[in-house]
Length: 407
Image 1 (spheres, rainbow, N blue to C red):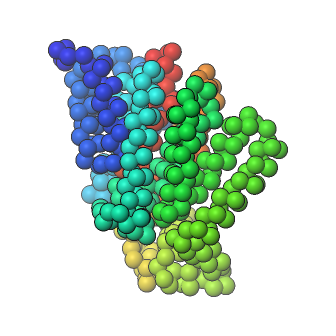
Image 2: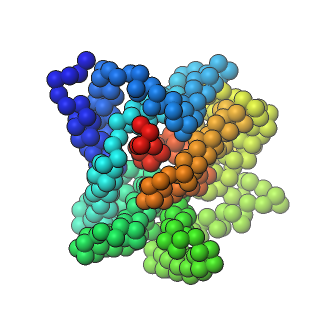
Image 3: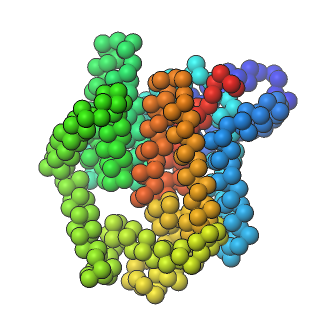
């Protein structure tokens, strides 16, 4: 066993590094994850680890969700793709339980600070590209400056980071004047950055997050909260709409596509340009036909690509085939039916339940916001399969839903 160095301190250093690398690099984050998991697997104390894991209903729900994907291989025809999906879900089998047993309450601020520092670097890089001070690199373009990941992942992560910064501004009474000024500047610059990049799911998530924050700040004063929401959100939306060409264009495109999607006009008109909203609506419609035929246990973990290809060629042959319906709920219903959907929603049920019972007021607010944001985000993509968003979800869940007094 590993007894020649201080494992506890090593874990904490690695967790802080992981929080920093998480939004910056896939390879770097995965390397730290492998090191953490290897140390954990060979460090002993297995009985204590086991009881920590099984005593938390949220963790158990995540494990059940993972094993349902494994079970779904029994009635899938495409085992290769099935194993690919199971591999993408491994965070729920190994990483989440591992992190859950090693996170420390006293280091939560360090985890969050490291994550926000990394986000500040991504934001700086985004502005440098946008102002054309540096050449676009990796995923970035001048019109959509998200260098370290696609805008599909960047904007939701940015929305959560804005919430964390705003949470500090409104609830941390111990902030120095310098720190307070820094966080205010950071919140404003990140909000602007939200609307010069193209992730509409993240932008919707931002408005949801802002609404939740307003309710939290005003301490459940519903009438006052609703009034502030009705004033502030339209004001931000209008400012972004008239100041950001990218946001303006994507909002107009989404509105036009939703209007075009009607029974009289059919699905062919909305998808002629192969736009993202149109394709998502087509996918939802096509997938629903398969779900109706396989409502309870779905078509199996690996059969979405081939089954969707069949229905796509019949209903919308002018559209490309897909391996993902860009909706987490539709994907789970397709793969695992109502059983899978109930399992997925159970995870979020326990998150909300644990957050409401938390004795730590500060953590309780964040713990309540995280699942709400993901429940909204997953309507537009499979955010529990993507590297960046899944890792953020797992990392923050590992300490937000842990009873530190019990474990």
